[in-house]
Image (tube, rainbow, N blue to C red; front, top):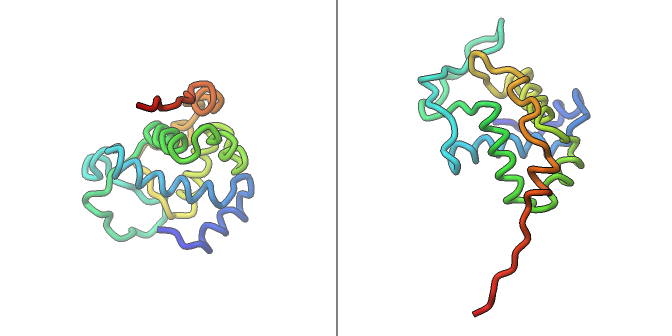
Length: 148
């Protein structure tokens, strides 16, 4: 989908976000579809190109559209799974402090023509969906297994 040079150019254009944040969002899009079963069929919500953009190759018929809310939920789930209690710290290190930042990252990739949106998708779909402190720290439960 992206090569490293393309991702580096996005970071140069908008240095608020670390390169790893872009990789994380891209990988989580796939995770949301394949592991969480999120999205609806692309035949129900056709991807669109930016105005004035040439038609791209036909999308895979099995490709699923992920809404901003679904993606943020997948980012939360995967973040807790990958980073545990440190998820908020990792995201903050990458320049991501709110779900709005995930929206900025997605739409940076849309603007670069590398990620497609569906009609009606907008940055506001990512606005203030959850608080990072609550999602990644306050609700985190430490536990110990009992030995038999």
